[in-house]
Length: 160
Picture 1 (cartoon, rainbow, N blue to C red):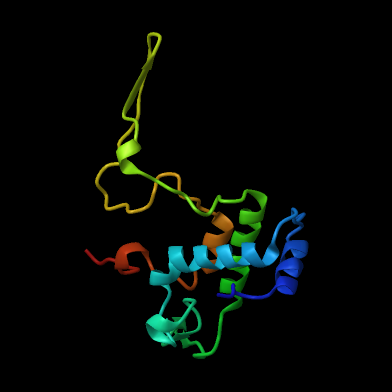
Picture 2 (picture 1 turned 60 degrees about the vertical axis):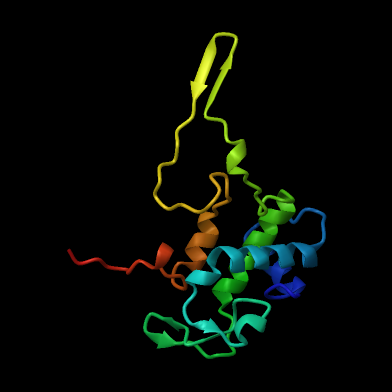
């Protein structure tokens, strides 16, 4: 499975952003970065994958529109490629940071040690399906903002 973009593109992206790329496997980091983008944002991208369920990546897509313009069915938007490069860089800086494992049964609600007690907030039942420590990058969010719909299929504008 190949990541979005290529190694030369990743290197150019990192240089333009002023990043010092740490030692590590760039192809492996690109693969994990692309998997993170697809897994985190794939259901919110417009349209459907051109190859259906057999397609490795979320892009290219059929019926994808941005700002009312239909995207070509063979296009992988540069914003998706750049977001995957950003995720790959985060993975190189801190290996494993994009793969958060969360076990709800292991949550600590209250802790008491030598007379000091702390109680943790419950996040409430707002339908949040993500782990509380899941990584969020404002750079990735900003890059993908024009391409992703709102969370949970809610409309962009609610009229009450």
